[in-house]
Structure formats: structure tokens, C-alpha cells
Length: 88
Image (cartoon, rainbow, N blue to C red; front, side, top):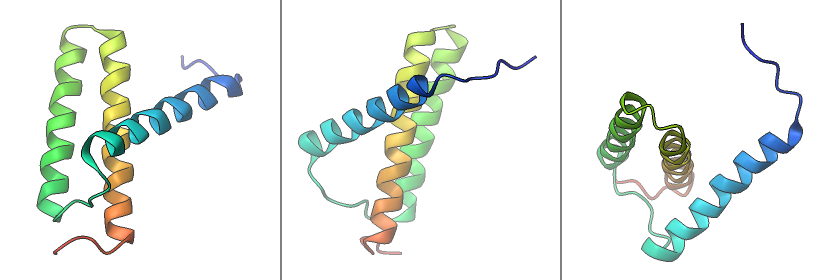
């Protein structure tokens, strides 16, 4: 049975971790948008593969890190689309 999450602090913590990782990514790599949908696909595939690897290792901390990376990649993909940065 699934556990009911009633602690809003857990949600706040997850969002804060994603925001912190996004800020770090922008500091490290700059604010350049993704070039194409194929770049988005490649990045999402890579992050997904890394997530699967951590699951197979039963690495809970690593899984959290990879899920944050997936969230950041998804957010930056959306930003790139909304900013019309993609060369479709």
C-alpha cells in the first residue's frame, strides 16, 4: 500500500533541491538553451540510463540525485522550448 505523504516539508525540500541543482547547472554551463529536440532526447536518455543504473545498484541516495538531474533536464527543456531556442 502506498504511504500518504502529509508532510509539505518533503515537497518543499524536493523543490529546493531541484532549484539548487538548476542554479548550479546554469552557473557551470551558462544559460544557453538546448539546440534541438534531439539534444533534449539525448540528455533525457542519458539521465534515464543513469537512473536505471542506480536502481539496479539499490542506491537510494544515487536515485534521488538522478531524479533531480532528470527534473532539471526536463525544466531546462521546457525553458528552451518556451524561449524558442530550439532549431526544430
